[in-house]
Amino acid sequence: MSRTTEMVLGILGGLIGFGGAFFALFVGSLDEALNGSSELSGLGSSAFLFSATAIIGAIVVKFKAKLGGWIMLISGVAILVSISLFGVVPALLLIPAGLMGIIRKPKTEKMAA
Image (cartoon, rainbow, N blue to C red; front, side, top):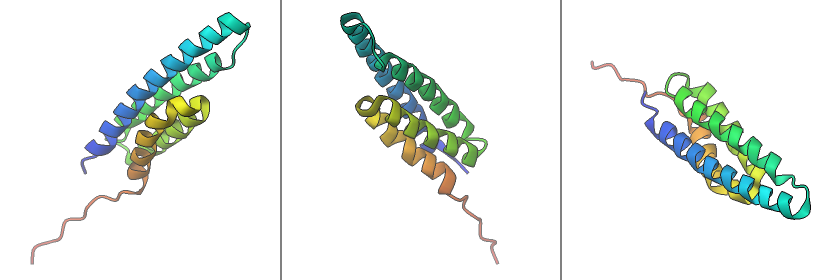
């Protein structure tokens, strides 16, 4: 069964997650320069790792749909938790893609009589 939809949504979610992670890292480094310490830098780093994991899950979903779906679902939730507002769009792409990978069943072909 073709899992192109899940793969495209996962790759887009991961790439947009990279953008949100870089923005969070930028804002965190500015906050650290001005105030001396910032938690946002660490959270941006974790979002960066989860974005990379989401892209890996998008590739895995072509071969093992349930495993790739779980990876994307967990990555989407983790990105949303780690960088909150910056991670809404990637989460909106990764969570449905992950659920589609987990729930969607392959079509069975009917035998011609």
